[in-house]
Length: 75
Image (cartoon, rainbow, N blue to C red; front, side, top):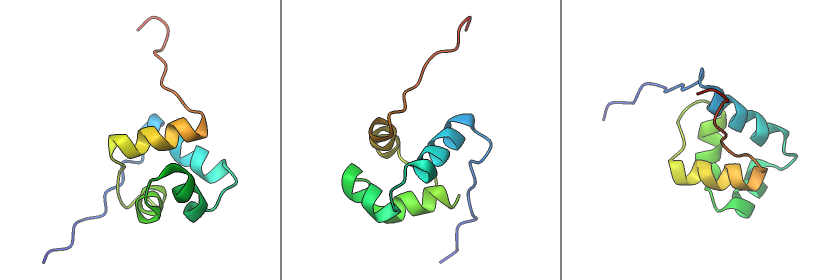
C-alpha cells in the first residue's frame, strides 16, 4: 500500500484561524474532542498539518470555539 504524501493546506487564512483557535482554546486535544464530538485523531492530524478536516468537523469545532464566517465588505 502506497503511503499518501503529507497534505498541508497551510496557506489558507481560514485554516490558519481555526488552527490558532484550537491551540489557544486552553483545552487538550482529547478534551476538545470530547466536548465537540470530533475525533481526537482527526483534530491532531489537522493541527499537525497531516490532513484537512471534513466540513462537518470544521463546523463543529468553529461553533464550539465561537468562530464564524463573514463576508468581506465590498465583495
